[in-house]
Amino acid sequence: MAFKSLDDLLAEGVDGRHVLVRSDFNVPLDDDGNITDPGRINASLPTIEALVEGGAKVILSAHLGRPKGEVNEKYSLAPVAEALSEALGQFVALAGDVTGEDAHERANGLSEGDVMLIENVRFDPRETSKDEAERAEFAAELAALAADDGAFVSDGFGVVHRAQASVYDVAKLLPAYAGKLVQSELEVLSTVAQNPEHPYVVVLGGAKVSDKLGVIEALADKADKVIIGGGMCYTMLAAQGYNVQKSLLQEDQLDDCKSLLERFGDKLVLPVDLVAASEFAADADNKVVELDGIPEGWMSLDIGPKSVEAFAEVLASSKTVFWNGPMGVFEMEAFAQGTAGVAQAIIDATANNGSFTVVGGGDSAASVRTLGLDEAGFSHISTGGGASLEFLEGKTLPGVEVLES
Ligand code: ADP
Ligand code: MG
Image (cartoon, rainbow, N blue to C red):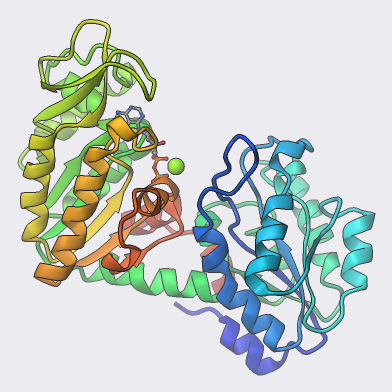
């Protein structure tokens, strides 16, 4: 990968220079605005600490949630500023705007080793605009925060697959470098993408099939087995003729699922039993059922114990595993067993079979921590879901490509 890294920037010297960093602080919040999983904040610290150490004036930018181009207090980065202050052991001021007067004043007022955060870049509609000129205009405002001798460090791995102003366009306006997180993620994922040791098992779950059909297709070629659970498996099961009742179903994807089953049938591993629920609720009635046994009007919210066993058997002999997407609605205790069981099977494969195991995806990574599993039990936990999937599919990541030019 031919791009400049943070080490190159540090070697050039950052003392007294403004360095704009795009980080990934898109952390999950509870209803009271508390951060429920700080994984992404922790993953961003090495780059920030190295810049502080070097005497840079650090300006952090990031998005949180989907404020859709409008200022919305609910998506303020205030909880992130607080968590960062604590983690870094130094005050991280949050600007009252994104690229407005307050952000500029604060950026101008930084001393060597200071760190500030601008507000959620998605408060500005130009951040994600399809119109290149609009994005360029916003990127110019971001770059201006870093003044004349500034630099840009791209460290938000979770967003490098997006051609957005703070990720992509701004990298054309300032000397640009890959941060430590982006660099280490790409190193690990390159191993899986280019040289996976076989058997290579891909485990896919999560919410939407349409997002991941392309992934199944691209990875089924390279992998020996593709295990499918989570909300995405019901369209597959429906394509096999099962009545999935009120489970997540994407009717418009049925034909594509059928053709995937025809082409890759022997590689695809689907659940053999399910946990059905009377409604989408933590306290819903629930029971383990066969594939054709979802009671009328119920829905499946998890894979069953026999499925966990079957999946675990495939995983036990793996030498490489990539897992994206929970097996069920793990946020509710009654439907967390499938995800916990599969995660444990991946941890076991790592320990007992020397399998190289990678977890990608915001919710998947969060599930490992919230279910109390040992993060260190996996070879690597990626901070980027979409980005890691697209990389493994062999797509180019705009936010990385722009660093290479
Ligand atoms: P990731 O962030 O790891 O890429 P996704 O965002 O694709 O994963 O999907 C995560 C979500 O999928 C979780 O919030 C989980 O509750 C949901 N999910 C998993 N299984 C089901 C199911 N059977 N029905 C509804 N939602 C599900
Ligand atoms: Mg997600």
